[in-house]
Length: 303
Image (tube, helix red, strand yellow):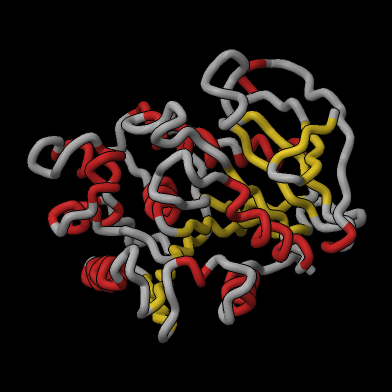
């Protein structure tokens, strides 16, 4: 069947997680001439009857044409928007389509947010489940290559992406079975709040809303999901920030990268002079193509 989301026709594949032991139903596929036949398929990443199917899904954008097994690199996208329901996955549709036009598969995930059933801990458990669905996505689409993949997030989505990609044994089990947590090859943070305690202490009420309190009130929650508290020195991370960002301070990326480097990890800071918070993901901005090239260059397509 076809549904229309944000004006885009999307082919829906009612896929299930392996534990559901159900057969994936064949569905139709849409094409967008602007991106040379990009196809979009929707997957529910939570088991049937769990969560909100209107939000707990991921759209997989595939490049046009036929592709050999493991020949299409994968990028997983986590949109931002202050963890609030006001902003959804449609924010990343232009990036997903631009990546597909470059021969890259883009898995653009949606999740419950403040105002639409999200908040603590639902927003985090949704994102964890969405990224842990990648192996199933690979099984259902053998053309994509998950052995070398990139996890990308913007703003609040960057916090979610960096946290989800660096979960470890200390991460509470409600945020993904430790035995089946998916691990990307690398992570790119675009204007991310990566030091949540500092953000909250300097007056960022978006952070205290999503975590349900200040660092003094709910310290365990900060320790569980704050990227700077969960550094994985083995995970390569690039933190990109505009120097004119007035929504999330560039110091968030700077302090995180410095902390990773002190832990002898691999982290790179990219500061874009004069660029605002939204410029990094706006198709109308002067750096949009630079961001697309950066993401695409991070992938290594199979020969």
